[in-house]
Length: 379
Length: 234
Image (cartoon, rainbow over all chains, first blue to last red; front, side):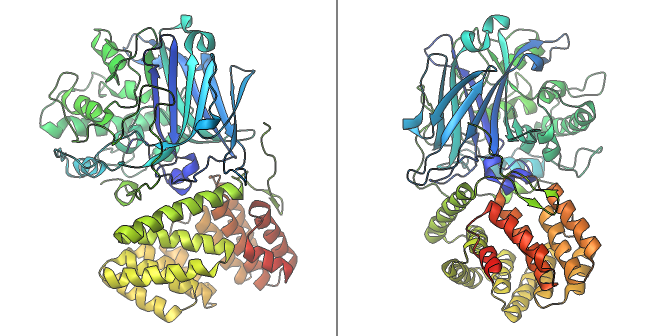
């Protein structure tokens, strides 16, 4: 389920549980970019950000290497650090601070009235509808049975849910210096405040942990190890080689399983005995071409263009309404040009809008999140 | 905005910086309210179990009898409606243990086992009963033998408390120190439960000063923690 409930640690405390990251050009406004970091799966009205957590978004210029893998230049990343105060007894709101670019700061408050709109950076933080959508049970059944188990229509497990959302909109050239690179990589993190900061969670692409790195009985190197908490500890722009080796083995094994779900091989392993997507997915960040205009359905397009050598057609990144489960499953099962795989859920109940802060207003009476089936890795 | 610097100290162990208790309790209240609404509407067992756990978590801090009464009522409904569901019986056992109705707990656990509850869940509750009845060595043996997630900080802290009650001070301090060192989430709620239980165990073992230190650490995180307040005022 994207990155909801994606580690044992996150399940214990939803204020650190990052659910999704989105990165897209602002629709109809050239030169502006938006990043959305969501957290707290199943948040109810009254939910609040932690005042002991640093919520960080990093944007880094990226390059396509000779091996066709998109890599971020982490050392050149721009960090956007968001912190919150305690809730105010009379209003229930929180004050927030955004720091970026070393010495620039924006003060804001939670909720729509507390959002700040400035030419360089705009920020909103508060409770909104969760824009993610997916048939979770059928996806889990697919991994458990090794057969595509999606139905038409599917059942959206996220329907009506809320999350806490941090929405940034920025002047891309003024804040990032987009002349430095056309490609930019985005990651989100939740860290402890103070020094040194410990990382609770990190997020790049949806389903990196819950699906692609899940324990499915395929990985003979770490057969039963839930790698997700270990994965969360790593700097997304600087993963230690020993950790990367474990993730590589798990990805190779799981991707081979997904490839066989339609009884056809779309992804023969490389001469080095790795799945062709493994190295790309190990670099877990969203990739956006800031020189291209807003477009829907761009998820994984930059990676596709790099790996096929044909270049990308869209801006890539991830728009709030992109059907990332269909895109991901279509690619890992059938290849770039295979028969589409659909999970039967094609949109959120209330899709995101094209205007800041993009996400729909919170559901005042959200249903209880069905966590039972999500918590246990499928064997 | 400067980062908050307050964090508690316990006998030289540096405790983690945690979310303020007003935020943590507000989030617990909000999630509890949502679960209650959903449970009232649909009566699902899994939601009822989560609601019960949320109510017990809140009761452990506020001592509000309404939460305990509600948990008791909900679990009675659960085992009545879904009598073949082991989750319902385990949750029921959890409530009856909390209210010291151990005969009911043993009956609930027998039915949970009959309906296929996991060994881990059963051992956890049985160890709780043994501990509450003063059979610390048996509880410790059970926890260690079954290896019920001994690397989880909360479990390690419970083992530490059992060591205290048996006079194994060195093992107890090692275990609580390791539990605190491994505590890796910003929520103050499980942490204060660990610290309160540690203080309670020390107090029963006659280590009054050390117990007061533990209770003060609880209040550094959750100033409204009613049981720690009561323990300090007695």
